[in-house]
Length: 120
Image (tube, rainbow, N blue to C red; front, top):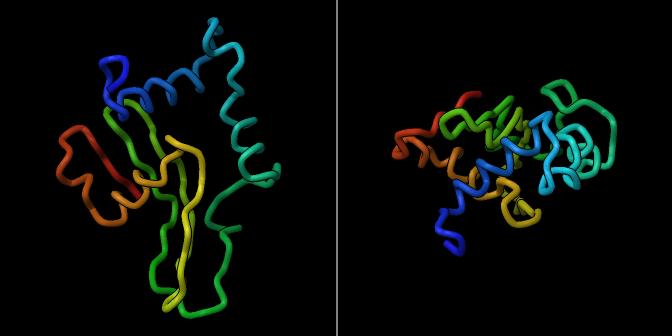
């Protein structure tokens, strides 16, 4: 808590500012959510259940259109992922991108957070 805010409050503010149509000194340099997705994924291809990466081994766990909300903030959008049985899977990304939020959703830990909601 550097500025008196928790990490989840900062993530919520970031999510809200990146989808906002208003421009301010802080959000003027941030890209739109579509541009951010294109940068992260390296493709213009839409991400949905039809073009989920398929694993070659038997599937142990599958997330289809997983969404996580903290109140009105949409933290994770339409996550589609298959995890193979008896294989190591690594979640990599920059700080605050949702890796831990995704794992918490898989482990149903958001059930303990009153404002959190998980769909998918």
